[in-house]
Length: 78
Image (cartoon, rainbow, N blue to C red; front, side, top):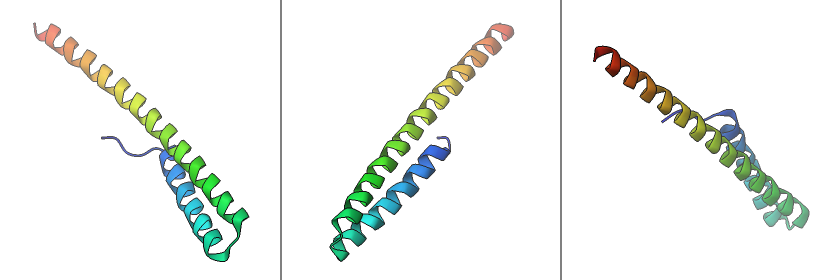
């Protein structure tokens, strides 16, 4: 499994910040802060998901490249 990319890391960070704002808004009775936190959390989830999609595509491209390379090696050993 490959390592996380920037979108995944940034998305997780945005989710954490959003959760803190959401909970602080709940405790303080500040509906605006709570809503802002929920929106930030949702944006972070979207960014993380986009990062996972990009990583999946990259992993697939690497796997196809490896398969082609391995096939070429077998043909050359023939």
